[in-house]
Amino acid sequence: MAVYTDVNEGELTAFLKAYPVGELLSYKGIAEGTENSNFLVHASTGSYILTLYEKRVDKDDLPFFLGLMGHLARKGISCPLPVTAHDGTVIGTLAGRPAVIITFLEGLSLRRPTAAHCGEVGKALAGLHLAGQDFQMRRPNALAIDGWRKLWAASRERADEVEPGLAAEVDADFVDFERNWPTGLPKGIIHADLFPDNVFFLGEKLSGLIDFYFACDDLYAYDVATCLNAWCFEKDFSFNLTKGTALLAGYQSVRPLSGDEKAALPMLARGSALRFMLTRLYDWLTIPDGGLVMKRDPTEYIRRMRFHRAIRSPSEYGLT
Ligand SMILES: Nc1ncnc2c1ncn2[C@@H]1O[C@H](COP(=O)(O)OP(=O)(O)OP(=O)(O)O)[C@@H](O)[C@H]1O
Ligand SMILES: N[C@@H](CCO)C(=O)O
Image 1 (tube, rainbow, N blue to C red):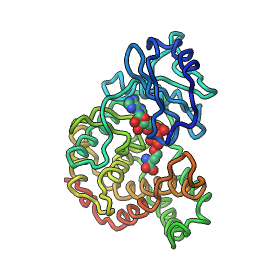
Image 2: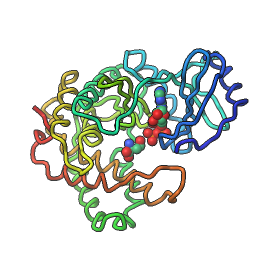
Image 3: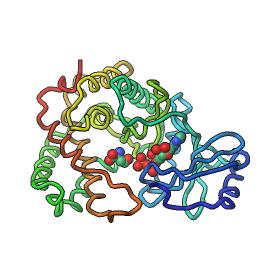
Image 4: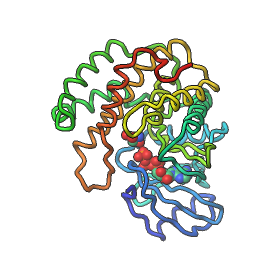
């Protein structure tokens, strides 16, 4: 459940006076999400999301995340627009936390996406990549290979508790990544966490993208690989080729992948699987059970790492 910080009506009413949103009508905490405290706010001008940033978001990154959402929304991407206060600022303070008001997006996230949904996600991801090309701010990916190393150093000793043999397996992967991680591929703004819980649909139509708090500069094809991991595996860990084909075709209908990007997909998908395995493993080993932070299963991503290691040709993902 993601309401770490409680907000009372009096302080919220006072906070909202700084923004052109009208009178507070009602508000409630939102259970979904893990990083920040989120509230649904009904005001006389409409519905909004209030986010209070908790410890795991670096406050210095907020201007990048909020600037990016504003940039993308103005370019026609369906994502939340941060509301600017009467004094021209976006980030305020509420209950001792940095806080913002963003516009509410209609739609529902999916538990069981179909191939048609995967196609829509591919198109939306490519649209986001193109729309981000003229965004002026930069943010290096804190969860690129150096970041993985730090997480691994903090988790390695206990890794075999989660899966026997994992320490040796990941050590060998690191050697491979140092040697073979692709360089020189097209780069720019990526979402970096475009999982099903961060995409809203109305029926089969994609209605919105949220949660830009891992967005950064990195390889576009790495973002595609992350979506293959997040959208195209079934509960039994089998790769759904129909979904992969739909996601990649959707992406390429908007931004065709180069030959080098296609060739790099297996390595990028392995790296992306390792990245999510590592953040999950770190949380699994360090966060106490029964706490507020929801722990996600790292072994789901160990299975994906193994799948990608066995790939012999990128066509196995459904590239046509
Ligand atoms: N603009 C929005 N419109 C509608 N609902 C939203 C919006 N932003 C967030 N939500 C709701 O709040 C929930 C949590 O948001 P978000 O995913 O940004 O939180 P988080 O704490 O950063 O979580 P995590 O990084 O773990 O996904 C979402 O699942 C969604 O239900
Ligand atoms: N999408 C991440 C959680 C952080 O947003 C995961 O599934 O591990």
